[in-house]
Length: 327
Image 1: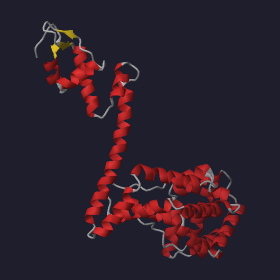
Image 2: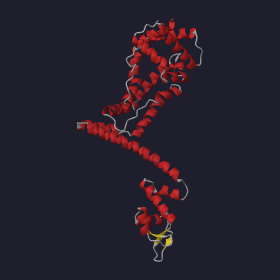
Image 3: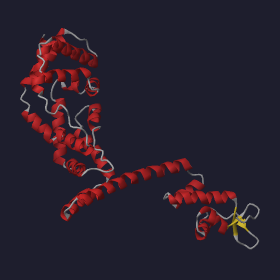
Image 4: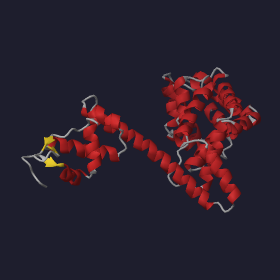
């Protein structure tokens, strides 16, 4: 590089920064990076500070930074760290969108029939990945409006996460879920079901309380052992069955911050008998069409394992527990 007392001619600056000579002149004419002076021939020259600024501009322009943002940075109206953070957020959003588009194209490429491909494309491009995430938020804001806030938040934490390279079934589930979440009738049906299920009985407040929910979702070891004992055919009046039932009473009492007592055991046994006697066919069908449908589609999108207790006879288990608690 030709050196004029630490001042560099515009051609050398162009080679060093990767900018064109016309671009460097433009930045000078716009007052973004003025020339540091003129040489004896009347040509622009730039000092080390100006060259460093032009190198920064080249990097920022490659990242898609606008001229107004660059001006703000060079005038000291913003910091480089804040500017980079803004662009990092933008790039991450674009990355999510690009991954979704890649998934769409791969899925379309797997379809053999052009008509099906066209229909799938129309349904997928109507909503961006970011819009779908917002739709889930809006859905749970409405569906959980009648529930305790912390309980509604827990329900809303179960949401679809489409992988980078989803299978066709995952995309189909994603599309169906998006359609349902936009359906006012489905939203209202889920809200009604959740309200009736979790606010329509005296025990609902207890069931939706934070301590009980923490206990339920912690993966209670004693409940797993109870289910295993019931599946094994162990009689409900066997000593081990009664021991497990007693541990269940103690754990739930601790979760609620109450004392374990014979009276509490009697009340719990009575509650299990009520569950056994309750004809829940209508409730099950309603659940499958509303909240259960949402959860099934989320599981399909996320490719999560099937519920190992999906085939469990909860009425029979409740009867078994009631008998064990009576001992």
